Length: 243
Image (cartoon, rainbow, N blue to C red; front, side, top):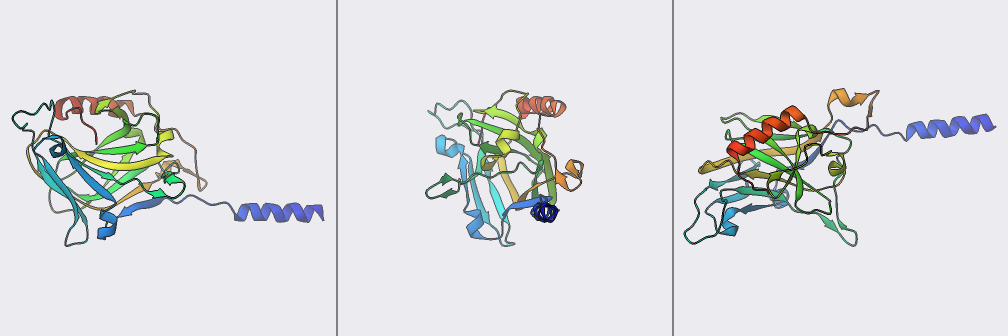
């Protein structure tokens, strides 16, 4: 009887094992309701000349568009200008407060986009006692008529604060288990119009991180070669801004 009971419990335990999915769509931009979960913030709110908007276009895709301007209005005390940013609204549930997203079963984020050839910064804001901390990585887009899927490993993200790169040894593992918001930032110092169409944003798992159907617990140390290239690129092309 004891043997039968042990066998029964073992089978029940096996039946309740859930194999993590290989991908999860976080946002599918096919309605005004989803688009309104994001808001734009530009240097115009600080006295600059840039403008940006996030809308649903005629093809039922999200469109982040506007005009970037690095010109400073006479009499303004701004040191840096020329940015347009997009950020998701923090979801809340009464009475628990903020709803955090846990992406710890995944190792990359992927954007389905049709871009303009410009480089956008992806901002991941997480729950932390330092509210200006965030993890950033570049998303480089192609110009032209074709859609593309841009996959960014979490190991490519670096810690930033107030627009400056921070600890190169920062581990993003803690952050991706408690994501508050995600954002996009354009601040490449190139005056003129921009547009980025977005179909969806999802998190994915690479095949190399699947063993016998189960996700391995991983740490995501910064890819140092990528870090050095990013640092050089930021100093040349980006000002100290964050979104």
